[in-house]
Length: 361
Ligand SMILES: Cc1ncc(COP(=O)(O)O)c(C=O)c1O
View 1 (cartoon, rainbow, N blue to C red):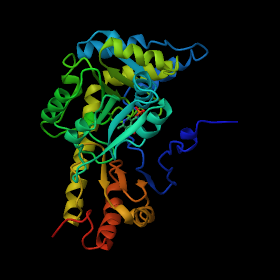
View 2 (view 1 turned 90 degrees about the vertical axis):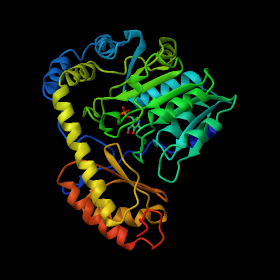
View 3 (view 1 turned 120 degrees about the vertical axis):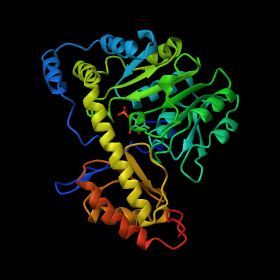
């Protein structure tokens, strides 16, 4: 049996580790709250017809999203999570010999998705503060570039791209390069001046904005993401999709979640407040951490990552460790914060004096 060598060399996607009963699972940026009011009922109702295939076009959900954002339903595409959408857009635009440019470190799924498409990843290092280096990303675009991915807030550093920088960046790119603005964590942003893809609709024919119901809306287990952009590009993604992947209960859950806006906003602002308080405490402990606008924080522990992850575990915190690079900790249950802080106090105390994750006193 012969498999493609680049596939053999690609590790399977590794999920955030499960947590035992007495630990907090803060490894996948999930929402700690249960589904929004009404969601479980519509899912139960929709489950009655699970002997039938779902509406492959997710028509009702697309209509609701299109009406909210003032676009045509043809300019909205729904997939089984925004990771499925990323895969479809990359496959639609890039193949062998083509390049996909993105920042690094960023969402851990990007490299694998590019490899599967047959294209080549061009990873542009983040700046020292964990933010995208948009100038360097624009410089990395060549005549082989088919897709550029911008992740704001960036997973795992939490930093945002400003609207101003994004506008400049778009003006530097050739019009035939597809730009995917991955805004999986957009609802958690409180900083002024951050890019908001939904405010840019219609301005750039080559821009597609990706959003998800997995994070703020708390539907990670049901798998619904959506994209908005030019219908011709979206048709390319639709043609690259595995048909019928978004189930009926998932579509109904998404519609019901959109109707529960007030509850959503209350939860999102609670998590953002918890994040800001956690960031403040970490700075007080002596950490040098990026300004997170998402529902997680990034500890750039570098060579000390495995040891630091072990300390978190002994305090009942299961986070996401990237060996040799750092640890991403989700802002989850209120009760987890104290345990995180006990662990991080120990970790920062034991980091070498001139470690970049330590603030210069
Ligand atoms: C930046 C980013 N984009 C996309 C996704 C995919 O989310 P989903 O497929 O659940 O919509 C994630 C999930 O962690 C993410 O961090």
